[in-house]
Length: 95
Image (cartoon, rainbow, N blue to C red; front, side, top):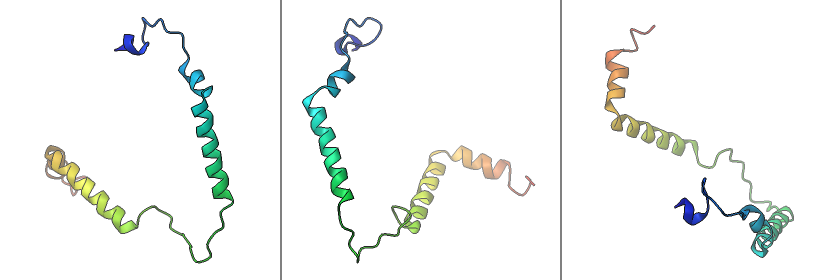
């Protein structure tokens, strides 16, 4: 596989793909499109009725629900960890 893509210790390819990409027309088009989007967002007027004061991307109750589900899934997949944590060394004895 390395021979096909021209990489590895036996590579005989001298092309610098990063440089080839930076000199391509597609690269220039992508950079121009990114700059246009940035300028468009800078000059956009803020709507007075739209106020987004959220600190996080989703409500805290959703975050709690997802974190709890993830934790229980982890415990379900590795019951030995859970048993060792709460049965072999009960939290009451570790004071």
